[in-house]
Length: 339
Length: 287
Image (tube, rainbow over all chains, first blue to last red; front, side, top):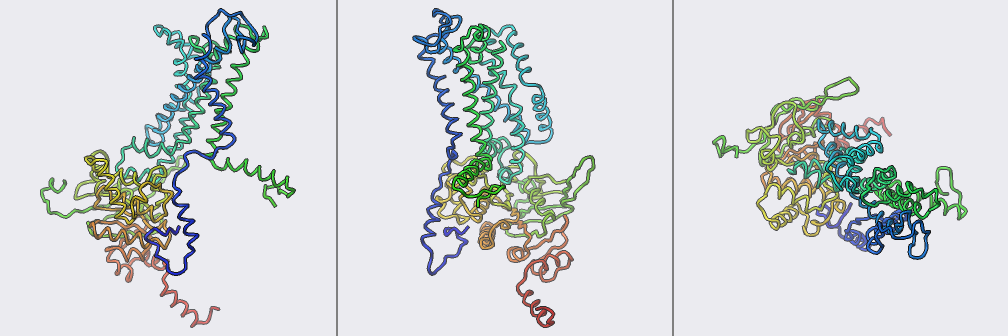
């Protein structure tokens, strides 16, 4: 590109299209790189859902009554005093929901973060170093990948909870988060390994090695920053997996019975025959909240996918153009070309 | 350092490549074949001299460059810096790298899109001068940017590679190679990815630096014309071996090897083109 500041371009004499040059110069001085992509509808919807639910989980527990206070009347429908009614044991459902959301988010973030860390450890190291280390790490990843997830989690959870000497920790949400974290990293590790393997061959990685950078610094300073969109997607995927996994485990009675999560609420409702006694206010709110949280996180994930793979971004745009063209009465051919 | 070891401090520095060999094993299913990328290459680099390595794609030029810069290991032969075998790891490798640096072919790929220009020049400075303060490193990085004619340096320091043109990026790559205080620079087709109009500027910069810093440059290229203009010696590489070497003028004007002649014929030559036209016109067979 002809940049008039670069020394290899000879200075031109005579009439110059100054306006064009000025325009180029203005474009060049705009050198802030946009850290976030253009906000799409998907991203916005996802962020709103997730932020609202997170705020609810963080703030609401400060304003509700004790979720384990059983002095209320049992099975009150939603109404005065209890926005979402009470459970069979007289617990306030809204209070339970607030604490349950906090518990589920905690499990999701801790398990998702742990899974991401393990995925980086196994995936990126295997992809970057190759050789024997790659073989060993890939073998472990593949073993984790072929063991069916939920049964493995159930076995580990059941085993750990009956281990002597753990005390309250055995029934805490932290333990469940750790179990979900160490079982949920394999899929991300495969993706990260493949990407690290391709980045390793890039010239800028070779250049960093020639400059004298140490391997770990190459990985964390030269390679990982270029993986940020991918890592974010994997983290969100991990959080969804953990929240749903925790709900599943709790529903089966293997969850953190010592703390309240959306999953333990569903389990309580099930054992308390909420469906049979038509107490919909007991099981619908936690179920809906889990579904909403999953939807919001997935929407954010799709939006990140569109950043990583711009082709996906063009698809809805093309569809919109076609719709507009049709509405305007112009013909659209089979392959999508607009006349 | 090695001088002191050998007890002859006034001996001139050399980077000697001796009988270099590199084989690749290609696997397809159970069948294995060996590709001899480099077979028996020897030459010596000295400070203040530019040696050109010319050859077509796939002749093994880049493999030689990657072995000298220790990105790959040789299957056989030696790389000797001041008579000492080039190390593979540790402190010794770091010291070797402070003497031998490389400029990559593609300036669009060799700079990390995530980092600023300043980062690219500061890192090698910091690695090879751990005792310097942050301020001194930054000052030196700016000096280096000025030295590769990215002036004023403050205009470029905080930019990222995608905001620079190809020629500017290659200047950054050259600054990065100079940063450790290298004596030897391996330039692997440094201008082949650049616009023709920009090539001369980058090559002149390299030549200026080579003269002023007394660098030993290995100039890898497939362009005989620039090799003749910028180097003190030309080596022609073909299928992993050096088939001809000598003074630039003698190699170009009086090629001995069949392959060198083919290479020369492949290059566009305005004089010869005019001659050809005259011949055709005289024969009258064309019109």
